[in-house]
Image (cartoon, rainbow, N blue to C red; front, side, top):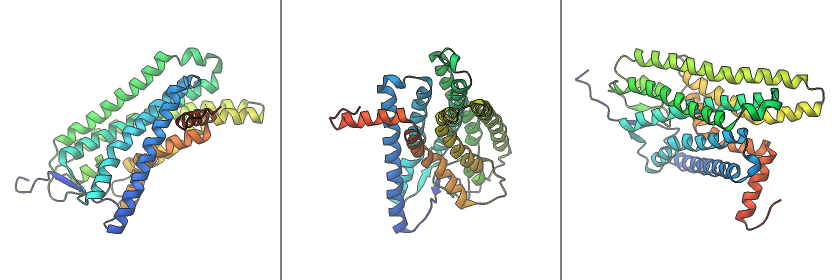
Length: 312
């Protein structure tokens, strides 16, 4: 192993090497990133400035928007720089750091969605006790616990990677540094890293997904008991945005990180990686603003103030 050349940087192959495609991709990802920044900042401003949005549901939505800003900023700016300069390189420390933040943001998003699912469960299934149960202190503990668990998950999966040796090929078939890609390039035995990731991933995925799944089982059962069609539709509408976001996130994320290693689907890996780390942060504020009347009303007020008009 000592005779092999050590790798101190990686090449992110991206989607295409065609120079015309590079220009197109740069413009597409730039628009997506700007839309992500604008959409999530607008959601945060709307929630922060509107008194009637100071409820637990919007408290979690505020933190989800902040998280999406961070998630997108971990990968997209570096991606844009690489496309613009044509170098497509990232240092080894930079790659591991990016991987660590991707793990942190990805896990935090999963648990944030679980906290939001629990909030919807309390609102639909025990509405008379909603204010008492979902008090400000509990909401803060849920958000803080989400970041703490995710930081631990990122830490225990990053430490083993620090002791790996990389040599030979340094090309990553993707747009960012993710744990499966780094493990595949190591010229050392990665069994420890794989086992740590497998165990921690299964535990946290089972926990977060179980909370979401059980919450929605109770929600659906409660909705089906409502006699009027209008009542059922109203109850379901409070959860539809969240369900859409959960499905988009879990389907793509689970495929990328938990498919058999023997299955080589580079194109799908890239597509799903773009979906949950680039497109989902952009789509979340769009989904919530389109399906939520109160958010749309608050956004119109902000836009009206920017234009110097009062929007009722």
